[in-house]
Length: 92
Image: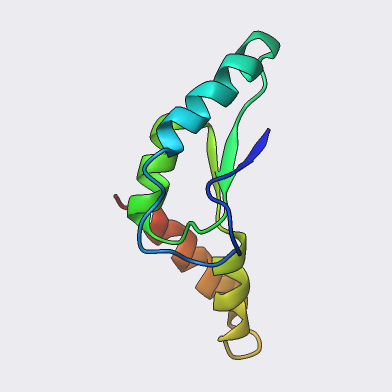
């Protein structure tokens, strides 16, 4: 189950919404009996975001952050930049 962390437009944010934990708990009450994993995305871009989200959900999605990162890279350097970025997200 893909859950949107906040309402509004996609893109990185400084902070996650304060009600995210309650929202995911409510969704989990529906998905747990069916053994469906929950992934949260929309506005995630920092190791702190990933740590918080993965403490309450099964996965985190960083789509816009990756698109922005890839767009800023020289041709041929995109894959390494993505690898480093993803590795940095797990450092918290």
